[in-house]
Image (tube, rainbow, N blue to C red; front, top):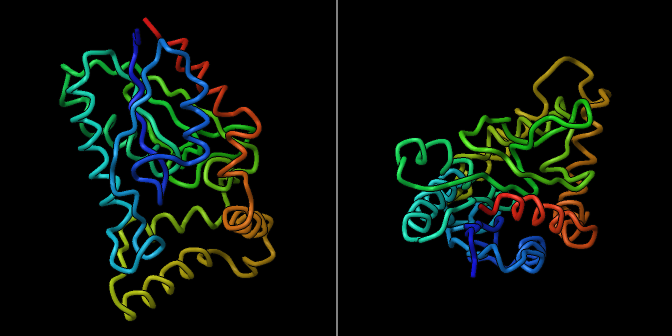
Length: 235
């Protein structure tokens, strides 16, 4: 019988679950932990569909769904996610959990975390590094452009632009692309010669063509490492 339930949101494009990284985590967990996908939109504006909601709206919807799932469970809970799903778990833990003291949540679990804390000296997640009201259990794959990027890489500025953007027509799309360009190029003259700009180009390439943010979590055992951290929280 399970003694703990892991409520998990998958990444962009996988709002109902099923990504290689998340499935690897699910397979790695022992019977003491019940794995439950929490469905949410998993959208990212024009990146997933011309008329899709913004990432911020998708994350907000996911946090509400996670609160409902935790409330309905008879087990102590851990909330977590992969990629955009991490941001759902953060949103729930930071904005909803403090107002819901009756919810028994023991930790936040994250894989491919955009909010990944600094590690290896000067690397971390592509989005803001946020505090949590519960313990963070987290793994990152080396070179993951979402969770393991240089802290000064201009690409980190792009999240501020795209977080709330939902493109629904050609004019909006052009404005969105212009905003991204402005964010990435914001900085001193000769920005294109700076090492952190080169790091951004490498990260963007790895996100599009690499496996660091996708199958590396299954192939190199990072998902299994997170499973062991979660199991250590069983009462």
